Image 1 (tube, rainbow, N blue to C red):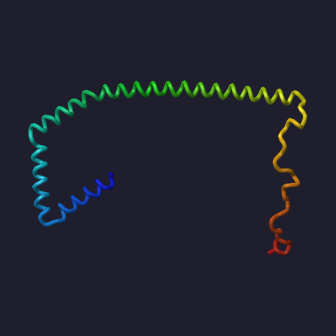
Image 2: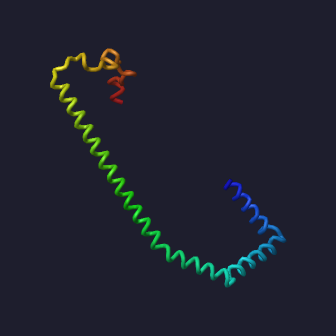
Image 3: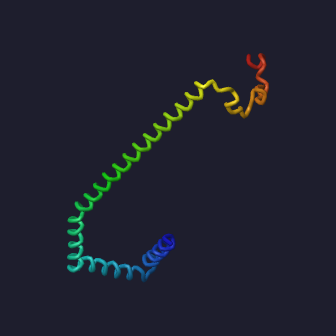
Length: 136
C-alpha cells in the first residue's frame, strides 16, 4: 500500500513539474501554500501547538523516566530470580553427580557409546606424500 502511495505521489509530482501547464499549476499551488502558512490564524494555531508541546515535554519526559526505572527494576528482579534458579539447579546436578560417583555404581548404569573404536576408520583418506615428493 505504501509503495502504491509513493508511486502515485511521485507520478503526480512528475506530472505537475514536467508538463508545460504544470509549471503554472505548480506556481499557483506553491503561492497558495505560502499564503496559507503566512495567514495569521494559521500562525496563531502553530504558536498554540508549539506552546502546548513545550509545556507537555517535562510531563512526558517524567513519565518516560518513571517507566524506564520500573522496567529496569523488573528486569533486575527477573535476572536475579533466573540466576538463583540456575544456581540451585547447578547445585542439584552437582549433588546428583557426587552421589552417583560415590555409590560405586557399575558400568551398566552408564549409557552405551554410540560409536566404538572399531566403528571409526583411522586410516588416512589419501596416502601422504612420499619422501621424494617431500624433497621437491
